[in-house]
Length: 288
Image (cartoon, rainbow, N blue to C red; front, side, top):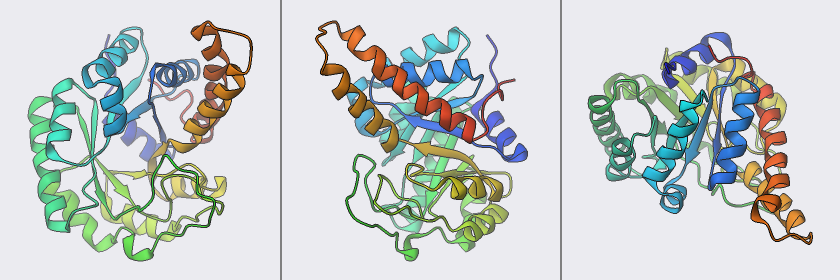
């Protein structure tokens, strides 16, 4: 069955002013909730797995699960999220992932660029349709935490617009992760996005898609304005993990031993949330 590439939907989202949703999945139940939500709303969706999530599920196992859903018509794309080294990226490329995010934010600008370019060259030689994401800037928090304090990202960590054009031109990435005020995880304050900065980055990025990491906890108005300013891909993880945990606690409190019955209400709760985000990002009914 023919399916348009992820890059096709990212360009479509940018030109039409909506965003492709990206949800991280740590197990089969989360994958199931994301895929069913995507199919029921006719929405293209990215399923992200961090290095730890890939290690837990298995690279080939994850790719095989997604392949099975694709063969049934699901418009979903598997992303190797926050890959910290060339080898990590290479392993996911070799396993058949649709998308790679090389996170070189912990490196010098020179090292970041060199490895990003190396990843792009290797990936495109294996699969011309693969989508590669590079990152400029640094988010210093973790997606597995809910912080009981206010957190503000130091503006020195923000993406610098003057670095964007050369980074994109020389690395040939398809997507750019931009640090514009969001955090990984959720804080008691709602970090505000620098919309003017997004506009400046978008101008320098040209046709390359801009990615917002740390979408959990961002104010709805900021999300809407970010999409208008040029963001066309938004990552959600912590909120979905929190819903999974809370609904699982409630389901386990009942007198039931069958795992599939325990997980049914958990999946249903996750689907409610995922569908809400898909609609809010404007991605429903966008599959060709």
